[in-house]
Length: 183
Image (cartoon, rainbow, N blue to C red):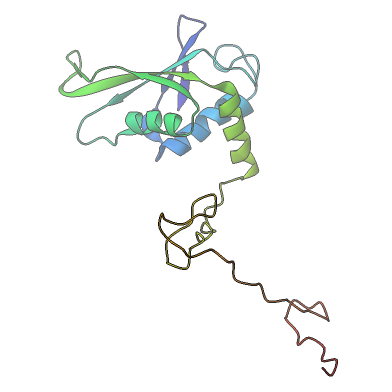
C-alpha cells in the first residue's frame, strides 16, 4: 500500500490496496503508515493524530480479482471508522473494457481509527472465547425477560438455584471438606 499525494491538500489516494490478503491487514498498514511512520510533508501528514479529510481507493471488479475494495469499505463501515461513499460500477473503457471498476471515498473518523489502531498495537482483541451466560429460565422452561418475568399465563415463579458453599481451608484452589463440629 502506498499513500499517493494529489493536487488537493484534502485528498490522498490509497494505492496498492489489492496487495493485502485481507481488509484488516490493509487497515493495519494504513494506520502504520499514518500513525507510526516518521512525520514528513507530502506522504505522511504533519501530525500523527490528524489525517487528510478524504481518502480515495479504487478496485477492479473483474471476476479473477478478490473484492478488495468492497471488503475494505465493509471493514471501515463494520468497525465504524468513518463514512464511505461509493460510486456506481463502471466499465473502464480506456484500459479494461472487459470488466468494471468502482471508486470509494472514505472520510475517516480520526478518533475511532486511532482507538482501533492503539488496540491493535497493544494486542487488545474482543474476547470471543467465553460464551455468553445462559439465559435464566422459568420452571415452565421459558426464558425470563429482563424483569424476571416469564410468559403470560404462567404461574411458575423463578427461584434461583441455591449456591453451594465453597470451602477451601488450605487455600490451594481445591474444594476441601467442611469441618465437622459433631452435630
